[in-house]
Length: 247
Picture 1 (cartoon, rainbow, N blue to C red):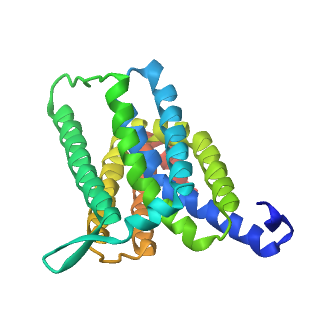
Picture 2: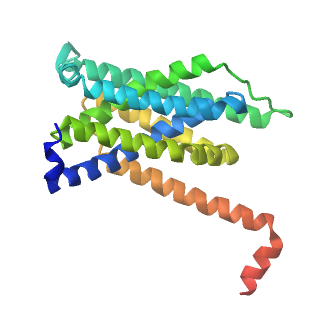
Picture 3: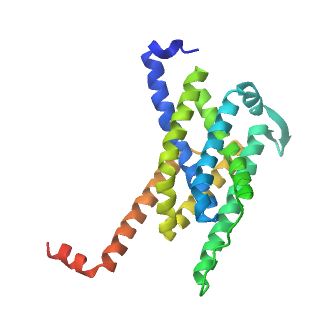
């Protein structure tokens, strides 16, 4: 099972797959962070960590069910001349859920800004965990299929998933706090989820969307928003702004 340890190619594959799992998990972190933001403050960290652990268990379960995952890629029926597989159904359903949830969250956020005394409705832990679990299946399915295509050894895939989730556990809280502290970042993150939802839907209809374009657009948008945040901080501190202009 671990005969690959002496192979340099296997270690390169492990490093590449781990990095890819982290990148693919960023949207998962954002979604979980937004969901748990409606929980009471004392429950958020627990729910966030539990959600990421659920994501890891879901990915490992799918990984060790490779035969079942492979069967999901086989056509189940034909609709309007288009072959529809189990994977397509999961991607389309997950995309629709992301669109609906992200749109609802954007509406709630904007509605709260317009109110004189905005009140954030809190929710219980169970519904949040159910939503996280459902989306974990969608995000994990694409991740596991990618992993199977990049590595030949199940143990390499499993280690990559565990290491990636461990790094995500460390990064999740700072990311969540940053998103909560900056409302514009939250709206931007929700817009990313709409983009991911649309991408999942079109891929469910066998229209391939290069991930590089999506991640570049996200990175560019975040970079622009970072500049906006820095500019707003400078405008809020005119003394510091005058010092920088003088220098």
